[in-house]
Length: 188
Image (cartoon, rainbow, N blue to C red; front, side, top):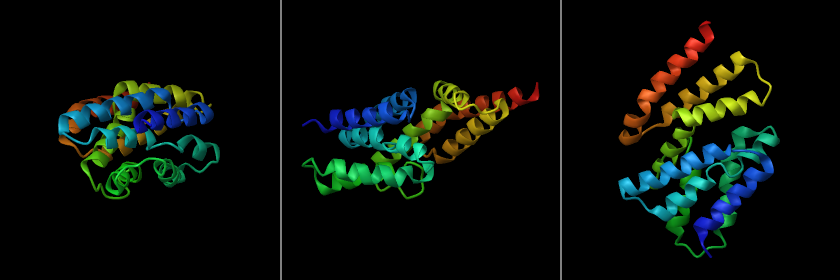
């Protein structure tokens, strides 16, 4: 059994069933996580599995109007998923830390969790991710002003999570430019 492929298949099935996270966001974070793991010498298996499971239950939580619980729901589902694989306990704990720490509500216990949290930030701070989010918000029948407010809220939230200097260096210029564009969009 290939745990990386199986985790990806499970996550994509949840996306197909519930519509979240946005497939573009899913791919952005997965791609950046692997890139960061390689650059920083982290465990590729842990990062590859952790990043696709971080928002495993986001869609279901959203459908149940319970988005704040998506992390706990994702941890529970991932724990059950991991039971089928003969991985060392420490590897399983690191994968679960990737999920539980990706909003920085709990500490990173490993570099792999920090990588996943930072890769997740690309979903909203990189222009491709923010523009994908704006299209998603537009489908929710929100007002233009509400879309801008929500986009800025996510932009700020993810910026506050950034912890790796490599990611800060890449994303900070985008952050300030996108903040300026959001403010300019309100002024006309």
